[in-house]
Amino acid sequence: MSFLKDTLLLKRIVITISFSIVTLILWNTYSFFKRFKNEERLKMEIVATAMKEFATNQDLEADVSLEDKIIKSNTNIPMILVDENGNIGANSYLNLDPVKAKDPAFLLKQLEIMKEQNSPIEINFAKNRTQYIYYRNSDLLNKLSYYPLALILILTLFLTVIYMMFTSSKVAEQNKLWTGMAKETAHQIGTPLSSLLGWIAILKMENVDDKYVDEIEKDVHRLNTIANRFSKIGSLPTLKKLDIIAVTKNAYEYLEYRSSKQISFSFNTSETNLYSTINDELYSWVIENLIKNAIDAMLGKGELAVAITADAKKIKIDITDTGKGMAKSQFKKIFKPGFTTKKRGWGLGLSLSKRIIEDYHKGKIVVKNSEINKGTTFQIVLDKIS
Image (tube, rainbow, N blue to C red; front, side, top):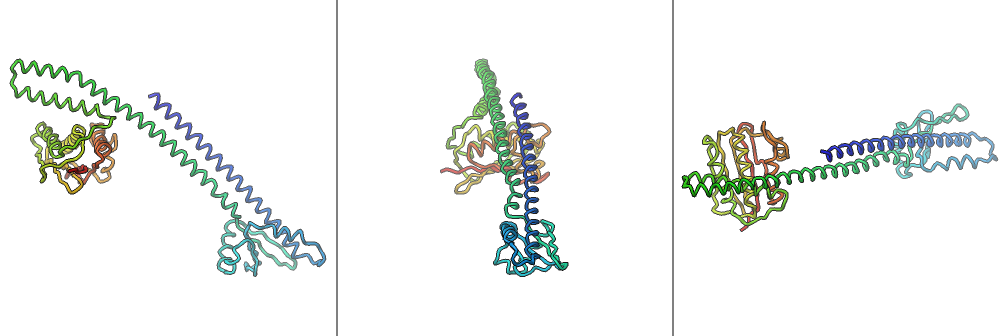
């Protein structure tokens, strides 16, 4: 609990710091952008003044080198000079592509962009002649406008990495907890099992009806299997070449014998033997989980069918019920830990089954199809070996 509290506090601190950094970056960038934009405006106003002085100077011997130098100093801000009627004169532009600028349509398009970005600078010449300088932001200023987005993207990636680290750490902590609980459960079951074996031996000595003793032995064997399953959680299980039909049928028959007589069970396969590399106890656990879920979905009354088919490379095990079914939107959610459609349930059976089949056996488990109030078919796919 302390670990979770510390993690939550650390997350809040990281989010607060990150939000503050983003806000500071955006504010500083915006301030710098406005300042840079104002400086470009001032530069264009100086250029406009120089152009006015250059054009209105009537003294042929006057030194206009300064004005000329100021005009030529604008090498990065695209501009277009138009008359009072909005007409663009010949060569009345600067810092535009000289080839493209020969096309009047290109100049008009650039002029529209300039009108959107900046208000024009008016130049009043002699004889009531007025012209206007339109300009757009320099390439440097345009690049600067994307700078905050780049920083936010980098920060987002950084936060994503941090989040994944926290999540993986939390998942690892939870897995460690579940593994510990599973192994402790197996250990706790082991103690009464030893005692039960002793009592069975006594019952045999007392000449108790063999029928009862055999059933008790089956349940003790069942408890031993459950203990072994729990002990394997968190560790890599041993896989062996086994007959899928035989292993599946054993798990099927165990539950058929102990289920409601109002459920019609059927087991179908056209094959004699089908082999795959599996762990008997874990694979049987998956089959039992799926059959139990099917029984619960039918509320103890209906039809349950197990069918095994195969092609050249794969073995397919279908478990079909006539229960309440599910919506297509739940096909993937149902395998997530904690998700359950039952009023009582932990939502761990199917997620554990998925892990056993896909992580340990390198197979696949899916909801093949399902219809509300008609039933569901789960399918397991395993590699076939000869």
